[in-house]
Image (cartoon, rainbow, N blue to C red; front, side, top):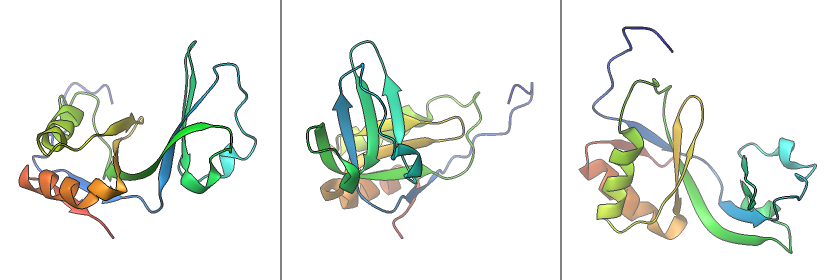
Length: 137
């Protein structure tokens, strides 16, 4: 939105757990995208001159890919206005204080924070202690 009167930023954000485990993968920069990628319910692609990064369902990781597995995605519910400052910083600061490593993805509408499944309970506690709501089911 480029409106001169953006909506007021909510003090409490709600994050919802995306079903399924995800993997963060690194491929060579000149590799083609897998043909099956568009069939995934949740995926992200970033290509740079140095690498091709994919976030895909864990079960879909190629055998010869470099991958970190065991991630779960917490998505901010609703559409975030582009004028709102510090949302991702606020969420990641709460997780950093709880010593939770994160991998962040931003889309046009919202933000997702990927945390290891083993850190899910600690992540929820840290985010709720920071005043946010976390829905795990």
